[in-house]
Image 1 (spheres, rainbow, N blue to C red):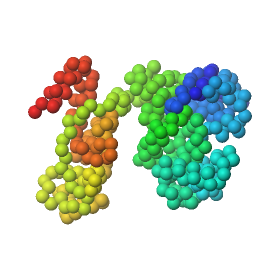
Image 2 (tube, helix red, strand yellow; image 1 turned 180 degrees about the vertical axis):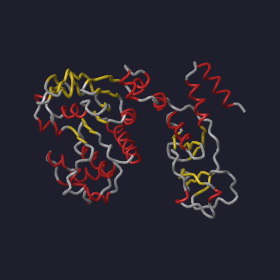
Image 3 (cartoon, helix red, strand yellow; image 1 turned 60 degrees about the horizontal axis):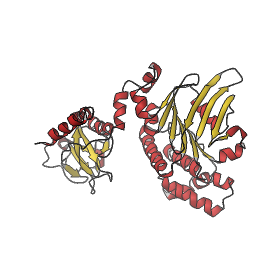
Image 4 (cartoon, rainbow, N blue to C red; image 1 turned 135 degrees about the vertical axis):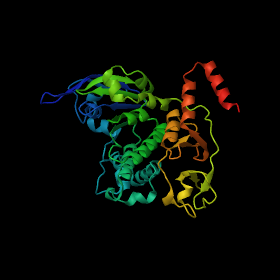
Length: 373
């Protein structure tokens, strides 16, 4: 557990970056600090490992005052991930990952085995271990940065906008990898971002900071969206916070339609529908195709990949987004293995949202009506 008690930071020029910050980052949970530029979120993060020294107040780690701890030992006990990964350009990927274990005195064989294991965990191919950072994409470099932070299995991780330098698709993938790792490892994490969507997706609790370093509100994401404490928080969270809140509502059983499909490489001859879903041999959706514009076999270059795919076990937001983003206006729904189970339309998802807002007895009647012929 990390505890801030009336923590303050004033720089020599008189600028106060953090005003009397009091909050707790619970053990094994992700606490996200979010806010506009100049709100003190990065300063607050760096005071935890004493890269910046507080001007007042106390920060405790599992009840121990960090100001009384040896700086080097404190930092070696914390993983640290920054925006551009901060990899050593003259070291290979494996050597970058093994930086902290080597500092802790691990032997070479143990360090390299641990480094290879972590590369696999963050989704990087083994052959990348012998490359240098300049030979990797931005997303791959960030994965290496996460692996390096985890190498010595620290109980605490500090993450300063680690995914903001990559494109939106890669960013979403990195977030999913990060959540999968956290579900497995249960680290105590403080995560800094300026993106409210990222904060809501990743955080067990979200702390919204005002310009000048004031804590405006801290709560779990669902409560933050439903009950912003004032106009500043409401504006920062966004006017579409009602839509965002749907990601915290589990999807009831969807009224799925059986979707005609064509396997990639097969012909669409004889298919009259304006849009047809293309799948692979395992019935995993690949994209949509317009039969009228295709002659012969369907190729990857003919696929429309704009629509998102939602899991049947996911949230109402993901199901609605799948329907709204699909070129056919039919949201593609898969099971947890990625296999197609059907499609759903936006108005059908919206009817489920209305049903979940009714009293339990009305909700039961609504679902019964939807299932009747």
